[in-house]
Image 1 (spheres, rainbow, N blue to C red):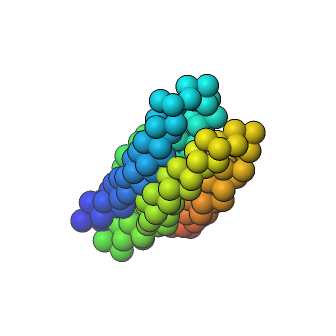
Image 2: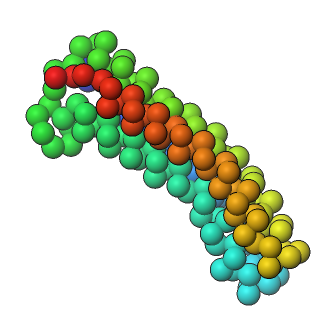
Length: 156
């Protein structure tokens, strides 16, 4: 049972953070596509804003990989997990799962607003990127919390 619980945590990490990235890049991409349809020269400036919310999915993937390595499913010896160990790994995956979901969604909204900056003042595009990067900080903190929690679990 412990193995199934641990795997569920890894699934949540990659899935919820990925969903945040899907929504975030979709939100920013729709707005960016509208601007580029009117002014194709601005494609390069808005591409980064559209891509920024995609990092949460990568962070969730990293968290899941670390959890699966911890239990031996990605190389090494598969470990016999108690339910308690499984729950520890499950809960260790939650920081990146939840921060990835929410920060991806909100970073997409901030990135979409950044596209508005590019539309009106292309020379100020860096400000839109900075605004979006502030939201990113919390996904990074979620990933760090997951890494620290996973490293603190003794399964051997």
